[in-house]
Structure formats: structure tokens, C-alpha cells
Amino acid sequence: MYKNILTALAVTAAFALFTACSTNDPVDNTDIDTATVDIDTTDTIIADEDTAVTDDIVTDEDLAEGDPEPVEGDDIVTDEVVTDDVVTDDIVTDEVVTDDIVTDDILPDVDTVVPCTAENCVYFSEYIEGTASNKAIEVYNGSTAAIDPAKYRVRLFPNGAAGANQTLVLNACGSLTTLAAGAMVKIANGLAGATLKDAATCTHGVTDYNGDDAMTLEYSANGTDWTVIDRIGVVGTDPGTAWAVAGTADATAEHTLVRKATITTGATDWTASAGTSTGDSQWTVNAQDDFTGFGVR
Image (cartoon, rainbow, N blue to C red; front, top):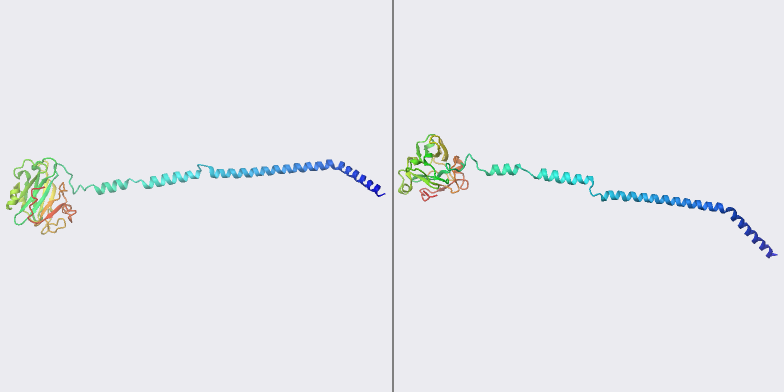
């Protein structure tokens, strides 16, 4: 009996299952397909979003890092810093080198140093103020050509006088007709000792000076208009006993003054010529009655 009951139940269950499957298959298949479509659609959206994110990130980074010539880089490096501000405007200058250093400081003052020509490279090269009447003056032709001594004269202004009391035109000294380059006129006092007189070109009263008397050497192209080209002392000024030279007080009295070999022209400014020290003076101060350099240059 139990065997028959189990068989009936099995048949009933199999039939019920068959019926259920036949009824729900279209609905279930539809649901499954729809779900699959939904999933595919979702995947596609996700894929698009991933692509969008990837594109945005890559593009921005490439623009920021890979652009070889950014606009801001050009403005800062090329135009403002290197070219205009640093190199051109600030460093290169014309005024300091050309005007201040070379022109003003190095070139000589034309008011005190006479440019060298055949006329004015003639100057006093030695001055002797020895004991008693041992006095002599030397005029040197430092030019490279012979000169006409008639165009030069020596004048003496005693004791601060504004006018000369003695004048000697050089052609009257030993009847000179020319004075060769490198030659000199040696003028001694008429009462000087034999050492000076024997070495002199002539003797003349223009050497009747003491330490406080001024002397000038003058040039004239026409024999009428005279220009001072060198001097010893200051015309119209009485210094008392004598003028100081190269830092030696009263050097123009009882001393021998020898023009330095580096001097090639006369000086119209006695203060500059005398100087204040052995370094800035145009003269060397030697002892009284030192005649060793007379007639030697």
C-alpha cells in the first residue's frame, strides 16, 4: 500500500514541476535578458566615465609639463631679466671711462705746460745764485730743430718790480745767429769767477739778481709782440728773501737750481714749476756754488 502512495506522489510532483516550468519560462527569460542589458549598459557608462577621467588627467599634465615655450617663461627670461635690465642699461657706460678718467685727469693743463714746438721748447735749464757775483743763467733749446735766437729774450725784474731793468735778446749774446737743437746759451755775471765766465757764451747784467728777483724768458715771432714762455719767480711780487723750491725754503738764494731732465718745455706758472716737494717740483735744488752742471744737459 505504501508503495502505491509513493508512486502517486512522485508522479504528481513531476507533473507540477513540468507545469511550472512551462508557464514561467518566457517571463524568467525576459527578466534575465533585461537584467543582462541593464548590466551591459552600466558597464558602458562606467567605461565612458573612466575614459573621460583618463583623458582629462593626461591632457592637463601634458600641457603643464610638455609645453617647451610657455608664455610666462618668455616674458621673464628673455625680455626683462637678461636683455633689457641687466646687460644693456645697467652695465654698459660711456661717460665714466671716456670723459672723467681719460680726458680730464690724464691730459696736461695747457695753461701751465706749453706744448712743445720749435719755438717754445726753449726754457731755463739752470739757475746759479752763488757767493758774491758767481751768478749765471742757462737757456736750453730742447726742440728738434735749430732756432733763431733773435726771437728770444731774457728779462730781469728786481725786488718785486712790475717792469724789467735788464733785457737781453739772445742773438746779442756772443753774436749768435742760430741755436742748434740741444744747444744752450750760457749767460754769466760780468764779475763772476773764471769757472763760470770761461764756460759762458757771454756775460750780461741780466744776471745781476738776488734770490728775490724775478726773471722771464720770452718769445716773439715778429720781434715786437712778446709772450712769456718760462719764468723764475713771480713778476711784481717780492717774496722777501727768496722763493721756496721743491720744499726747500729760500731756494732761489744761495743755491743752484737744475731743471729736471724729464721737463721738456717752459712753465708760465711758477708755483707749479717750483712745486712743494722733490717729487712735484720741476727743479732739483743743489748746494751753493755747485757749477758742475753748467753747460751740460
